[in-house]
Length: 262
Image (cartoon, rainbow, N blue to C red; front, side, top):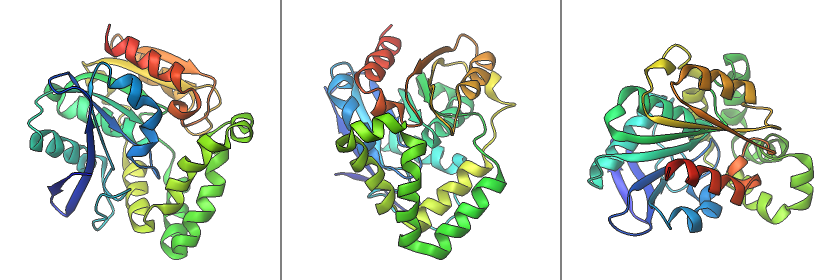
């Protein structure tokens, strides 16, 4: 896959769909890579040129020195758009990707056409949650990432889905096991430090908020908090845990498309 040179390394990306169509950027969650969106590509590329990328520290993108910030990761998106001569795009991000989307809509509103914030919050977790995880990963290395992989199944998917659909679950949690410990820890710090609760009112892009009714990480209440503060925001809820795009599959894709093409 192609890559764009950034300060501190390369950003791996994939650009698919009809040339000249509106651009839709997809941003992955913590511990996954651009392939987390595979199920959406057939539907999305019927309407958009889809630009997905591995967030810094993930997948085939460079692992530069951390800790990172959401501002830095948002700057990576702007650099990617600039490198590809894309002046404006719609943006769909999940979890950490949703934090990046909030930052972009607040700080670079002229670049964001429509905004889809999936399974995310204006603030995700606390230092008391993130710091022990950072320490564990940095001290435990690859084994710690494998341990996280096992623990994440119950956060990312409901128990019935994980049991019934191992062919969909295993490739996704496998991404976490393969993520660089240093890259993962650096991104944990970015999520830990992000807090847009006081800035949501500045978002002017058309916004859809997607929640999972069984999401233990970013709850429907987190979604409603954002909806109440972003003018005109819509909210959609699926029977899913944290990775609603994987668990809800086609229903997720069609709801997002209905919003983006309205």
